[in-house]
Image 1 (tube, rainbow, N blue to C red):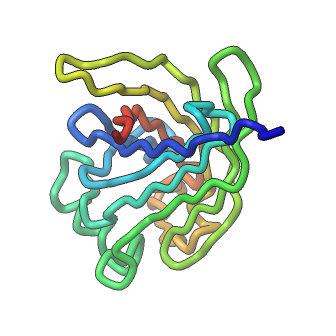
Image 2 (cartoon, rainbow, N blue to C red):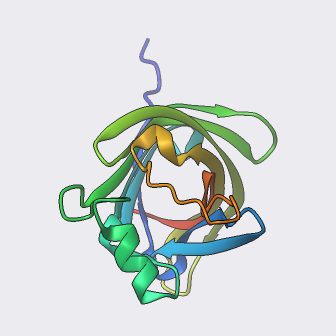
Length: 182
């Protein structure tokens, strides 16, 4: 007797309906928000089941944008991301676990500035829908935080008054829409 086999489904990030943002403390008193404007990613599922998905995302470090050109150039420099030598930030999942009705814990390897560390992210599936052209889309909000110094982003400044210029913890949110490939 034959058993049913699961069918792999590939999904691709729709960059027109997706964004990746981050927040970091500045002088310990306020928060600076930035984003990456250029990225791509795929999601592979078994029969549209996101619980066993494989996620792969690549972000162009040179696309960092904090709405301040001088700061962006500093962040692209060797003191931070060193975008010339390390043009990509990557994430590849190793385990996706369902934790609630539409909630998932996504564990994987994050590589920044050539340093790879395991991280756990949290994803909320906002649902799936067909667009005007009959394409199936799935939306997710992904959140997480990392310590920038663990990834070689060790530049640090202290003001004359003793305030730390840039916090160590980076919080990020990715609102991504994946398009199901036919």
